[in-house]
Image (cartoon, rainbow, N blue to C red; front, side):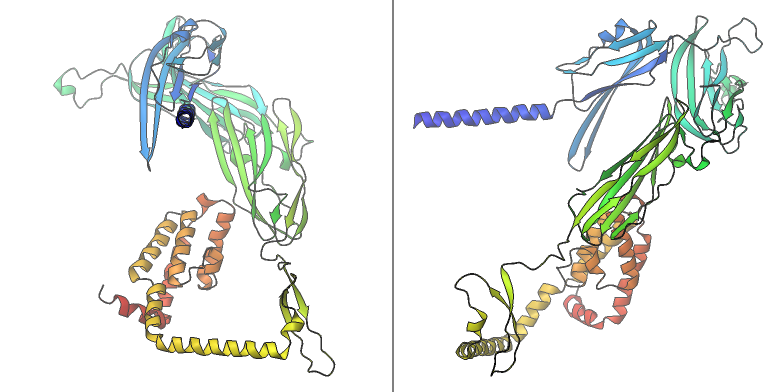
Length: 587
């Protein structure tokens, strides 16, 4: 007995230890490291950012000093408590500058028992021209603006990176910098962000404010980017006397950058203009919401096709045409675009969701999808392809055949008797009652007598408890006015917030009470009760749910149809009004 108790305690302690270790592993800190720019130029400062998703010990950044000087550092902590979920995020922002040219790997940084990943940074020599005063003398300028394009020539509709920098050694105030303008009125210009760092020109350390833009010219020829203008007050100081309180201190400066230009090449004559899509890289992928080899007739499956291009915006990506297929309904949703700016340019995506619903069982072949594009790195045309796909749909649950535990038998007419044909679902197991036995006169005589007796007995009970039954039935099926109003308010609130999923749930809850039918479990069943106007809005909502386009659904039309539905029923349904008034007239 003692040995058994000791063994049980050992097992219990082992389980607790395993659970504790598992929890420790699951809650291990996730530490990441990123840079504001990579590669960087020598003598240009940049930011090295470490982030942890849970509380960790103070880090040891001494390995960074081997290749970089830490100019300054900042630490921040962000705590959130939302819907019972607690999250913590700690960040360390280091402003650093390289000591030499080359590729350097910063080893993992220790945060107590945790470590960050290593990161490799490339440092190149500064290629920016030496800065001098605007009069071209040898006196270095205290403040000036410069701009540059990343290349001297490129293809029409392809990406050019335009960079404008404000370099200064003096304090400024009330500063502004104009947006870039080109000689191509149709050119697309997208902001890539901004950065602040330090650089050295002719032995002088400058504070740099930099903005980057992606420009997509729509015409061939010479692309000219007009000068960018800076305006601000230089050497701003505190008011010298009380009489300067309402005067702006410092010298007003207006500076212009240099104009830059590049040659824009027209698309090759051998390329169809409809297939002209210049990019650094382009991929075509697809995803399915369910197993396409095990589909059911009548059940929707969502196909998501994504076009990803490096060096193009999402709006520049083409449409995809879908071929009609017999027995397979396809409902393409509105495309969703996204642009992710980075230091190297725009990465654009276009996502198309298609709801596919087989109308019958069978095998369907989706043809391949081809997308031709021009590789600006190799100056060659390439093709992105989604191969041909075969999907199989099995019969739906509603069209499934009857269970084979029973067989249908038909009594054939017998000679000399009345011709009567009966269809009976008779058990096939051995010892069960057969159709011939059930047709014997003695059996039917006693069975009829039994049913008649039960019917008379039930009728007597109904007559005795008619009043009590009526009261109980009303209490169980008729909701209160407050309940109906609460459910209706939930529908209007969620639809007003354009929350498709929450509106679906609220509508079903409202319908169960409003139509006194707890068997209503989906939107399609509500359409059997409501008006044609509300039915149409429910169909639109249902289609949005099928295609997962929740964010694009607008509930304003559904609210209008929903309110009209209640208003119409309040006028035409006198039975419903008379049933509710006596119950809640005192509330």
